Length: 287
Image (cartoon, rainbow, N blue to C red; front, side):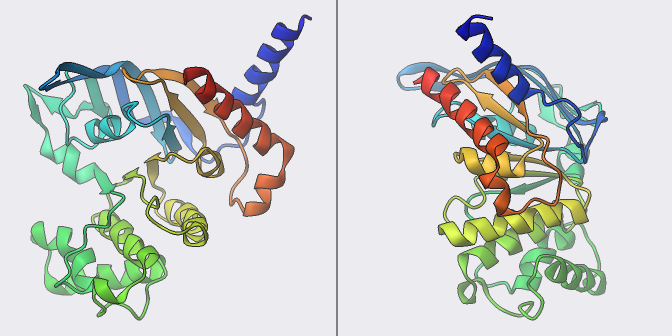
């Protein structure tokens, strides 16, 4: 085998590890992108953000999107969330179109999807409890049920005792926990996260990565997360999806396959480091 073939075989083994343990059910598709493209008009002219993106996300799967700045990661997540209409292609949630006749199907977009952004976007005049329960209030849920659900979620995300606190009294990591709890308040099943820990310090970010795994497992949630950190992507994901520079297309899908729960000693393992190196090498090739 020549050196190029050997390298290709090694990379292939990284992306499809044989017998990798799985916690997700890939056979049950939760989200599906079929030939999705997106174009924007700007003062400089037409901008093609995404081109022909097709991807299936299975039930309880944890998928992480990575790529260089401007590759369309956030646009793709917002299309999945029903916040941005694709210019072409189709988006399915549990086999049903997210968009129909040019409009969003709110029963699917709102009922199945929870969204967490980099900024927690909490209402400063609401307590932790009221911020978490707000989606339920908007759905007409009674006060007693809202409070019970908010207290349950505070316990699940490590905020017990802070129910009556205000956002200004919380650390950055705690505010993000509130945002995650709010997104889970109506039991959406699918959690979409756009750089949720990007503004946190390194130690808090590491802690939140551990907690996010536990939250996803506790709620049987399907997760699609955007990050710029390759290490974070490999640590969290069942599959890492690498997007090419604009227009964003799927360059590779890397199976990670480490058992859960994961701890940070995983990062010292040779295979973890190999996957990180391979993804970084692909990013360098795109530069």
